[in-house]
Length: 279
Ligand SMILES: C[S@@+](CC[C@H](N)C(=O)[O-])C[C@H]1O[C@@H](n2cnc3c(N)ncnc32)[C@H](O)[C@@H]1O
Image (cartoon, rainbow, N blue to C red; front, side, top):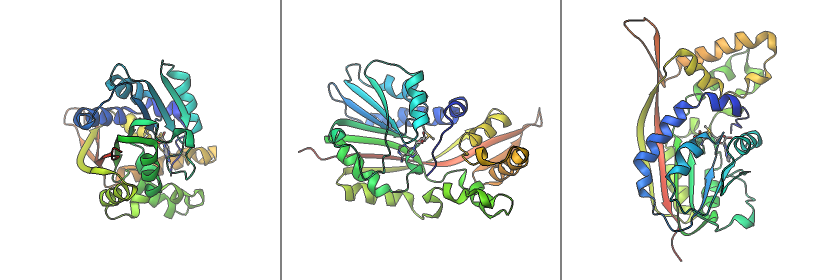
């Protein structure tokens, strides 16, 4: 599991996430059945930008409370510092922990999560936790990517003698070795007790407006670079970006007029919807 501890960099490089989340909410929020005075939970809130710019504005005006959670202390602190809003709280929470505070059980009408659950290793525990956190009749709407574009780079760097000592393999998402991620989520959600389970698979792409933005997107997701000695950083970054470009999800073309490389990221998004049965 990656622990994104670079909220400032993430907040400057997350237009890919902003674009994907806008599209996801525009297409799938209609599945949600809103209630009066909702309590709402979000998992993997990150820097809080997508939450405050996209998610919260889509809530009914009379929502009662929103709790934004993340496993990363620094992400939570960044969100707290930058987004002080009425009825909105941020707290640290690992959605795959076997010890979710009992005070949160059955508290929420809805759980949202955008582009986080692919970092979670224990999908079974995460499904059980989401079920327990919801009130009867509550719903989840979550997006994740089926294959993480950084995985191939981490895998190849873990085999490169120069960079093998830095433990890239620890940061590979579990899905790198999983044949059918959608089926696995469906099973865990059903086993946890959810009904009306939908796992929607969608092919998506994002075109970067510059090479710098393409690189910054990957850099914001790389926790290893901080461990590389200063004198080797530029060599490491060069190898890292080369591996990202070689990855099967990057498509590079050249624009006619400027002969500049155009970077396109192709990815598969999974959208999970499920409902906890009413009592
Ligand atoms: C790609 S960011 C997405 C942030 C935000 N939702 C967005 O779309 O911009 C993924 C976030 O999930 C968090 N995360 C990873 N594993 C988690 C876990 N087990 N429980 C809660 N949050 C987790 C990371 O710390 C990171 O902030």
